[in-house]
Amino acid sequence: MHHTPYGRSVTYDPDTLKKLGETFDRAWAAIAGNFTGSSRDAARLQLATIILEFAADGDCNLLELKCRAIGAMHLPRGLTSGSRPPVIFAALCRSQALRNRPAG
Image (cartoon, rainbow, N blue to C red; front, side):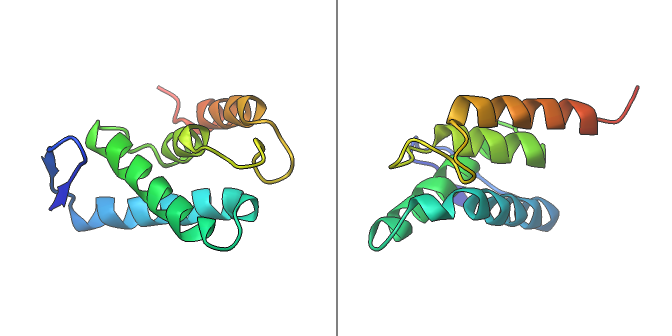
């Protein structure tokens, strides 16, 4: 069971935990280059907390969750990997999410 900073208790099934782990890995890979030294551990913890909070609110679409989490991070250089401003990166994520949704 995960206790959120706001006192909520949330339980995730094994499949959801696996998806959240994959989301974390993909999001971290996208922003890891923005953090060095001692700030890396704090940033990883912040990212994990953000992902768990969004998931607790019911957001479990992996691509959207990854993009929202990256957008919520405070990046030290103000850019995501690939030197894209966060607003542009978030817009790219939204357009990818829309293209990847099943029709119907």
